[in-house]
Length: 498
Image (cartoon, rainbow, N blue to C red):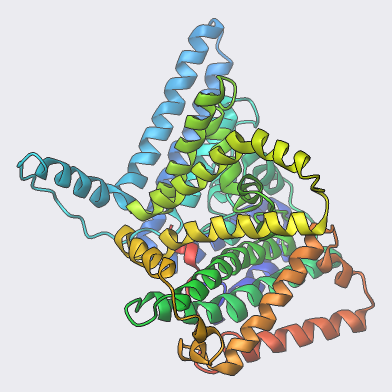
């Protein structure tokens, strides 16, 4: 069930109404049933995968907690706890590997054997990737680690824990919630609060704007150009690549914002997943503000266990590269995703290594790092680097990405930026200019966020007539220029494929 569908527009109000009417002691059961129904609307059989992952990680938490209460010495306890954690990770990651990486891994293996003239017969499984499997698997595994680290109690109520894994607003595309935040909130249902619900509605409206008006409109241009790079060369691809940065941001941030808004209406606060990332002045800062829930997950459960920055500079750089290569692979079973992750890891390593040289250069040249010009230069440079890596994220494979890079580097058709040729890429002039206006609205909103101006709360605290007017105008705008506008249909969110 898509957020941007009529089904959800019926589903969510019904779920919310019943949730606040029924007794507190059964609220979590109602949300659990609603969450499984929400997921089963895609493929009912794959609900068994969530259930299996839930059972394994639930039992792992119980077993770890049981080991802690034993009268054994600490060394023996640690051994048994590590065995439980290892089993939980192996079982869950094996399921993820089968559905997401089996064909990819064995195709690489077959090519490797072919290099030494050995023909390897590789079975190919035609399976549909379960929606959101990477997200709920990581969320469930983080619970196992949190119990192991004594960051959270082992939840004894299986159904409440099952709701933590399957909570429908963030089930299929995050944010990847931590047990310390979400599980504790699910244990204490909140009463309906009009102020909280008002903020939730405004968040959902903003999310729908990002997805339906902006991301889906930009997608038409990007898909047209990237789908025919033989015809659309050079600066067509430059514009499409810049716009893809907008598309993926609005698409993913749109989903996260709708999820936050829906959860807030239910009295539950989800973590912020995006913090104006394209206004960052370094790639490292970008990754502290982009897909925050996944970045922090890799930091806490991979980078730090690998040793983090505690074992010298070289080891730190290796650990950082491992994290970003794995992050690329998490996004998809393709070399192009690994290249994308590797580029972003390499950027950060280069940033750290060259930091002393850059500091000395700034000092010698008497540059003011707090000046608008200096920050603007850093922001643009960061955007160019990040946007270049997006080419391999969006391309249909590594070779396709290389062809796009070559076409961009050899660009000579600068005139297409001024002669109206861009209006032949799926969007007519009116829709193209509307897209540009919406991008400026996005930039304005992100600048306000960075200046700690919370537009949602600002609107929510105004008089009723002003709030009603803003909501009415916003909904009308979305209905007119979003999904129900001319030639635009509902579209999947990009991160559903991960």
